[in-house]
Length: 603
Ligand SMILES: Nc1ncnc2c1ncn2[C@@H]1O[C@H](COP(=O)(O)OP(=O)(O)OP(=O)(O)O)[C@@H](O)[C@H]1O
Ligand SMILES: [Mg+2]
Image 1 (cartoon, rainbow, N blue to C red):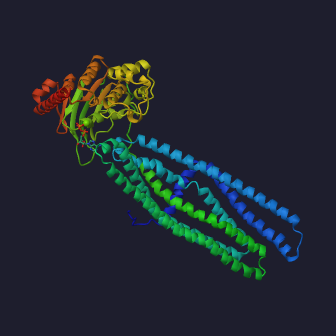
Image 2: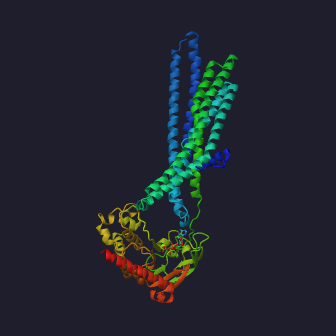
Image 3: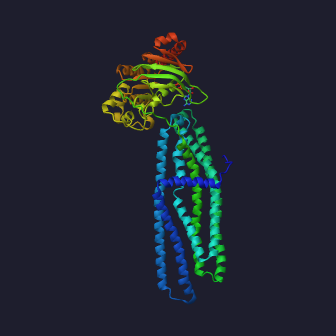
């Protein structure tokens, strides 16, 4: 386990903690106020109970011991006072726990909701740098930890009041005893602070390790198919085991350090009581205080032993909270937001003309992916984007849908820069269908409409155009069949066709298909594309294509090579003009022939 090398100062831990608490409390001041009021009631009840015990000692027990005085009348008053104080204490506890619990769970829920909203507003570039498992850990265990301090906080605030109240009461009985108590209690609190400061960096480590553990778990579930097909369960389980051991060791390490401090803190109140009995005895001898006073003081301090430990627990929680919250804050600090203009969508009905001017793009500073891309596409054209693997076809189509922004140059829809569109306006013009169709855990209809208002007719028309109607009709509940997480109950080709229907129903003015029918049979794919063309959609279509039959269906072809548009024209023109294109298409054709041969042999 990585051992932290630098320790932050205890004051910086406390300061960060106070800021964190202030941030939470500002959002729900009433709940916090009520919880502290409950804690203050409890603190006052403890001080009062010590006073009742002292008063009983002086007025009932000692006179009885001295001369057998009649105690019956007074004992009832004493019992009534003790019961009253207990009820008072119980009400304080109920009020504090209810309000503190509400505060903690409400804050947790707020933080989770805000986290998700914040993340969904961020650019894809931010997501591409994150580990999904780690983000899940932030939303779950880091948020839990980050807000964990809120539960014991009101109690600890009450305990602080109790300490001051007790010190004041002991001082009112005797200044010297008050001084001794105050010093003793301050020493205990100081040891608590030191303990929290020591475990803070260890907590940071534990939270990081938890993040790694979640990433591994996520990867194992997401990659279950690959892991099983290659028989690598053992390797994945071992990797997970090592990471989970790290988390366990981290937590044990934190706790063992903390327990050392706890042992000292537990012993100190008893030692303090001994000192006070010794000092108190001499004060009784000097006639400064009564025996009842000393009973009050020692009883009070014995009651304080547990609450004082609780300050330690809060500081312990506080250090874990800061460590967790810092990981939450890192997500809130991400500000890679897409900037939007105010251009409205024109709405469906007319295909869009598309152009790209001197488009340059890089995912990472050191690697140029597209450079000086120029393109012009008339409204209603079907364009096939062709290029070798890794040439930047998907990247270009994502730029057209503004999933990323170019580093230089611009892309226009009907002459309007895609960056000038208002928020949520561009998706009303452009539909992007990726190769890996993502389906939600919903019905077929739910996956096509995605919660928007469409008629059942619209849904079936879109499904028919996408070549999905036949298999949907065969599903047990037709369009109302549940598809499971990520559409697990469907084949790859079926998923792709539902994703295509999802795009078609929105009647986009520009439809982008990034190899969106790759998992569909070549003959079915050709049929789908033919029916799309015949439907005479009010859409310009840009499709990344590999199959020669598909490429031939397009009006125009754009060949991407050497980070730019190397050739643009009809398929026949490109075969003549561009040797690179001719070679690539020939390779595709040979591949298609070979596959067809294999399929024939299999039959
Ligand atoms: N998120 C990313 N971060 C960094 N580099 C990336 C990212 N996505 C793609 N690349 C790189 O950009 C280049 C172009 O990728 P792109 O996916 O656009 O190629 P492609 O032409 O669609 O390839 P394919 O035919 O295999 O789908 C590749 O070199 C790839 O490694
Ligand atoms: Mg691609």
